[in-house]
Image (cartoon, rainbow, N blue to C red; front, side):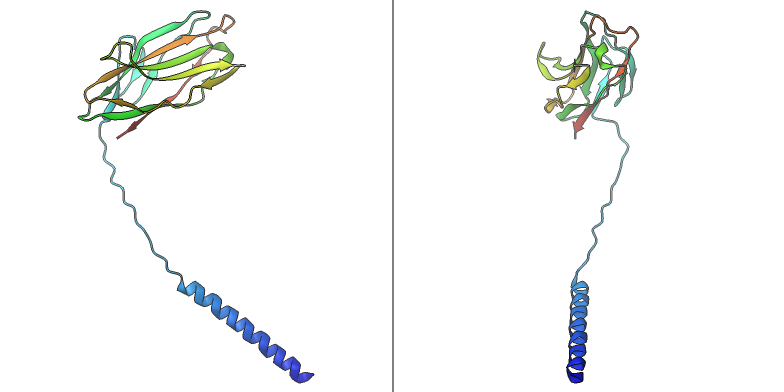
Length: 184
């Protein structure tokens, strides 16, 4: 009986040693390597810019605009040329409008706020729309527009239409942020 016990202890130690060796060998056999990424960031002017239009009221830089718009109860107010998008580069550029959720006063103070992109060279040709509407007291939007391609040296217009319901609170304010995503 004593001999079996000694053999069993030796077998256990041997199995433990083999498993430990196997674990060490598998970890040691793993190959690791490193990749490097280096970015070169240059400050430059955007190829696609925001520029003032005939109905423009707000603050503007090449890449940022704040429009001061109004909405009237029971009347549609149209800013036919709220702001322009200009491609000052030497090649075509593609872009799209991406909505965010409006913030500020309760949504029930508006019926809609619609943004429409027009090609100025072809009167009435709509290139894309982004519509904000109110349903059940909550903002809804039409989602990201499709990709629009603007030619080199071309300027398009964004028209904005607003409307509020008859019971809207005078002085209510909402903030709508739209990203103009340009693919360069």
